[in-house]
Image (cartoon, rainbow, N blue to C red; front, side, top):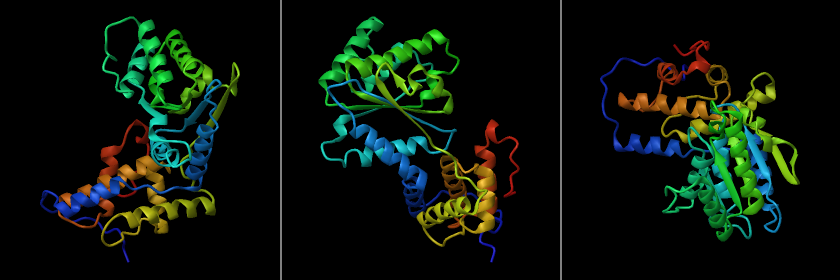
Length: 303
């Protein structure tokens, strides 16, 4: 049985309420792998081990683009840590590193995350930094998580990078909070990425894409696809079928984030034609839309 037949040309229609709800539901899909479960446990234990009377520590979570780093981080911040005894959402601050990041813009991003109405006040960088440290010390915050940390390095001079690194160290030392830095592998060149920095503990973990060489790797990937297939309403379409799984791994490189976007886009295409079931052609065209420079040499095996 061909679980993913080619699509027939049809008129484009607006998706109905049921289909829209299905896409919203798929957007909330999350399923742990053995690797993400281990990382979530280690990150949670790192946060729990924070001593509020001593210097904080650094935790680096790195991985290639679209591998699912942000998703894993959010699971820890919104589910794992608040469920721990003595922890609450107020103990956690989540900050997205701004584009064209420097010390001033990073400080403003932290103040904005704390809902400071004076974050954009036109004062000196030193005063902004003092305000940030003071607010962190007065708050119940114990962990600050910085996502999109590759913006710390994009085209930056070493002087700017060292200035931002010094800002992180001030937060750890003066506010006595621990810091999580999430981004592409390049952030491992930051000065704080060493195993120990002036008495501060440093933890480094890498989130890897799904492999496909060994039998265990293939089984793990197919099991994830099975759970993803089950999250799509209606008749199952066979994402975990051996041949389909191999093609999906070929397109996605085993990256969870890219794979999810690919399926979401393909399902949206099917719904736009008022079909309840995506096809191989939907996946192929979705890949062409999502294809970036990193996928230019990838053969589109669904078209």
